[in-house]
Image 1 (tube, rainbow, N blue to C red):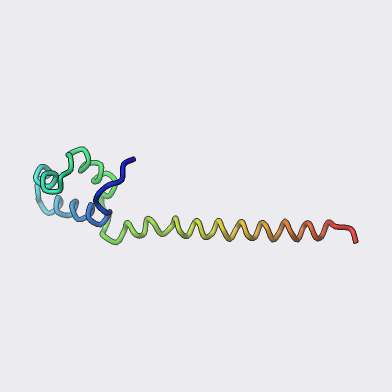
Image 2 (tube, helix red, strand yellow):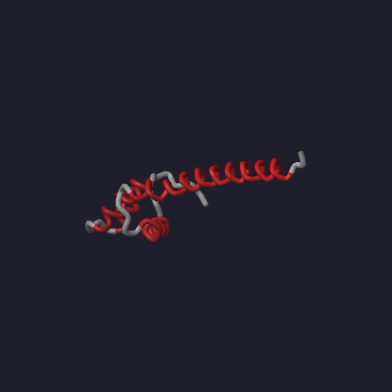
Length: 88
């Protein structure tokens, strides 16, 4: 998918303008986007507040952190099992 030239916050601002009563054609003309792009933005960001896109990115970072911690724990367990299985 192509990268948008507008940030999530800007897109949500556009949608707020539309909800305030600005016509779709006027918005598309002023921002230089097509009707299809506007409706795709609307389907993706409907009902979001300006701070919500940041919340969408937060789980990705937390998920990566948790995966890294799990991998470290699995390595520790494998090392302990290896030590326990050796004959002295």
